[in-house]
Image 1 (spheres, rainbow, N blue to C red):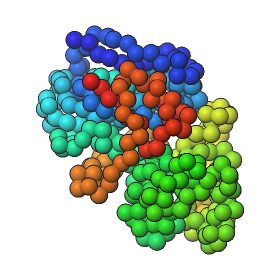
Image 2 (cartoon, helix red, strand yellow; image 1 turned 180 degrees about the vertical axis):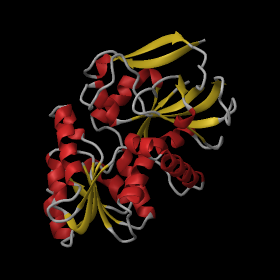
Image 3 (cartoon, one colour; image 1 turned 60 degrees about the vertical axis):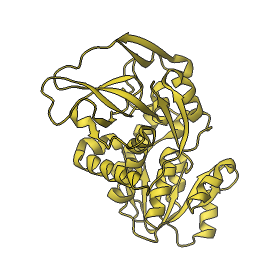
Image 4 (cartoon, rainbow, N blue to C red; image 1 turned 180 degrees about the horizontal axis):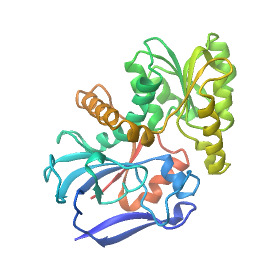
Length: 336
């Protein structure tokens, strides 16, 4: 038997992505082998591919945070799992783009067998990120006003859907072509290409925004802070602007500065969110939040937007959809 695995062989564009076939090894002691059905694609995968993510992985590497599949074989010393169990897997940014993956028990969460794998994989990274920012960090209350940058993306649409459930007043930046999606969730869209979101919000929300979710970074962070209300909170959870200009050192410097401040000159709280860091600190939160969100999916209370389902062998094409802003919601790789 063999394993199909995607690797990044050098830093650069999608041309550095290769698909390899290798012998399928047995799981080592303490490992679970999983036959992947669906794997998620994220903008951070592209940042790592381009060598623009802080502390990029050594080459060659396999991208991917999240995957869903069936347990195929158990290594020695594994209890509480059985062959055939359906599971969600979450890695720290590398490992997911493969037909078979190997995981430690703390990276695995059992899920009901009847839940669709494509829908389930959309929950792991995007919805846990959105939920934890809304409820673990910002601790939002009904009626509060939030601003979501990149509102048509994977995390953006998750924030919109969970924000609607929390009965929040929502505003979202998106290109004109994608504004219908933002409106669909009951949010007010702002065309970031042709409108100044700071000016728009000062006119529409003179009291200010209660929580801003900013994945863009750079100057956008500074401008987002200008929209906050007296009790407003700022949450930075990415730095996608680095794909157009800048180096990882810029990202590190900005986050270090904001982390040291923790509060603005006007008294607004500053939070920096990393799903991998918070999972490391509070594994119990991650597992509890993922299970809760999967229960919402099972009950039909959330319905993740799937932009594209693409064969694993076409991972380069999948990343291009994200890179060129051709997707709305989650891009998923399907392993046959």
